[in-house]
Amino acid sequence: MPDLDVLLGLVLRIGTVACGGIVVLGVFGLIFALNRGKSFFRALQFGVAVVMLSLLLPAAMGVGAYVAYNATSTFMANAQETTGEVVRLVEEPTQEGGFAYSTVVKFTPLNSESSIEFDDPGAICNPPCHEVGQAVTVLYDPANPTTATIKNIVTNWIWVGVFGLLALVFLVLALVYIRDSYRKDRYWRVLVGLADAATG
Image (cartoon, rainbow, N blue to C red):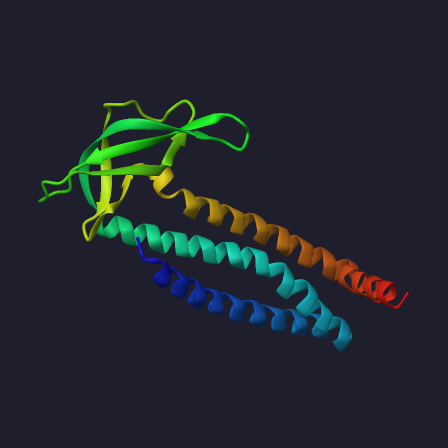
């Protein structure tokens, strides 16, 4: 997978694009409110306090989904496939007070005589996801064979799904809030209440 510097650079680039998009949508929100008869001050509050702020969270989740997709797809495109063997299970405590088991796999990269062991972070479950001695399909980076994982479409793409689902949920909530705020001027009432609290 891409190293940390590459991922950080990607986050900054996509984050910059996302922030630019949010600003553009905020301006459109301001213009929309002006065209619907709102005063400039209220239209500005709607564009900034409602549209822009509401879209920050779904945009952040969207950036996470894109970065996770890019990292995973890059790894998958370059990864080589071979067969490994589960050599042991490691018991790990969970936040709920119980235990789960991670899977340690041993495999030999193609065109190599040295075997490698890795603990797959995606194969932690209770009861154990695998049994000792079980054969599994391993995907590994040929340039860095220690970067490896058990081939599993769910665990390999889990973060893309998590960030993508969160982005969708927060986007729907943001759109509902934007519509409701515009119809009922809730953004205006909230700001007036904050001003009164600050001066009182």
